[in-house]
Length: 124
Image (cartoon, rainbow, N blue to C red; front, top):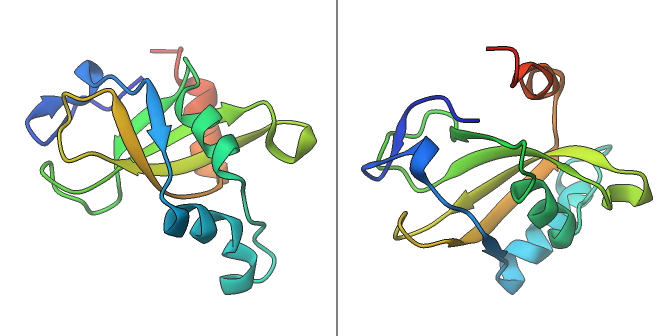
């Protein structure tokens, strides 16, 4: 589900995200979040990829980003996260939104607002 906006000229509903790659720096970034934000656990890039590939994911423009911005925010379920499954919020980007392989940038456990939107995704 998407919010009807566009990313670099492509409607969010038309984007295909079939794969996510993580640079070493981006992988280290998501794993080490607890070092930057005490009490916020680090994530494994594989968990973030699972969330992005969730068929029920929510795809939105990231924060204050403009339509031609660098990133998307994806909220999705990772069945492997923490050995029990968890809803995650993951930032991904692509130089070419027509490509199906995207680059991972960051990720966190989804907040309450993200959880509510994810649960309501099929109610409209």
